[in-house]
Length: 200
Ligand code: GLN
Image (tube, protein in one colour):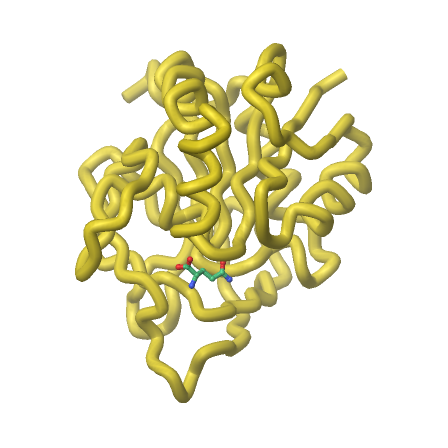
């Protein structure tokens, strides 16, 4: 049985655990380095990226997470979790795991649209479109060559992306009851990303 850890230092981890359990996998909160052992995958939820990263460093989770990512651990980062995966966060010198080749800007959709929803066509998920909830979302400004954009807003702004074992969304797939993004993530856990990389 797959064991999925959800980083539970701050932010919206409860909803991710519920979505994953709905899909029939074992999902539990992770707060200590020992709980990273033997995981099939890890979710980094939304919340406040500076707070989460400070706590990750304090609890000695950051280095271990990066080591596991380098070994191929599948990680889903949503909203603040996407910020934490990003190699570069523009306009601030806050730290991140720096594991994914994307450049992001925090809270970049402007005050008047702090929160919004959009229907996204995601070919990996098929029909119908995925209703995405954005809350003070980060904007992905650049993606590296090995990053695959899975979904974009009508103006072309990427809002879901994947780089091998890393999946990141600027929105909150755990909030709508539509578990297709989590389901897609679980296919990555099954190792399908390896096959894809090997054929490149
Ligand atoms: N604005 C938050 C940050 O950059 C992310 C918001 C969220 O996760 N909903 O940390």
